[in-house]
Length: 224
Image (cartoon, rainbow, N blue to C red):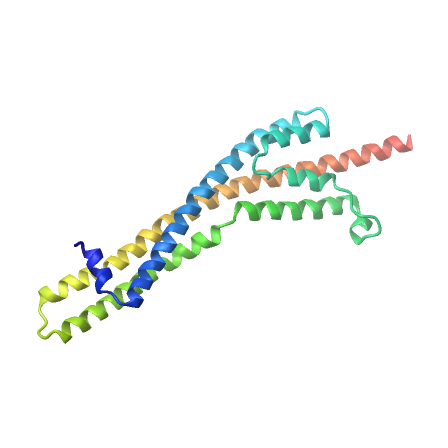
């Protein structure tokens, strides 16, 4: 019987609950790590391919088709939809200048896309910051529970203490094993999401300038 199995069998409800919570946090963190790694990788590749393809298209409709072909994670199409959208008549949005309308719509679309890319970051940060303390609590409680059992059995020797205490320290190691991957993933994904955010902000800015220029050209042509 391994020390972990012995610790589990000797532990009480609180000890087992802490161990189960750490296991749940570990599984959640690793599932999120694999999913976000896959998502951000696809998003970065989509942006790198779709943006040049959009600007190389001869027309706006052609650019939209290019985005539909390359933008698998739908991080660019919402920005284009926001740029070409027409506000409903008789609304406060429709009363504003074109520049203000574009800024508002593109900002809202950008926030929605960034929320999609940043989903799960709070969970990773929470796991990384709380797992060591949960493991430490499990260790303290395990040592306390072990010492009570030893004292109830009679004389206390170093041999009787070292075994249970060593088994209780496994909880601290488990907490660190859960927290370290979560913290590393949080930092890596934060950097990748930030790189995507910079590209998306640039694309949104260029769309805004393009739509403003297009509106001015149309107004000049109508006056001619």
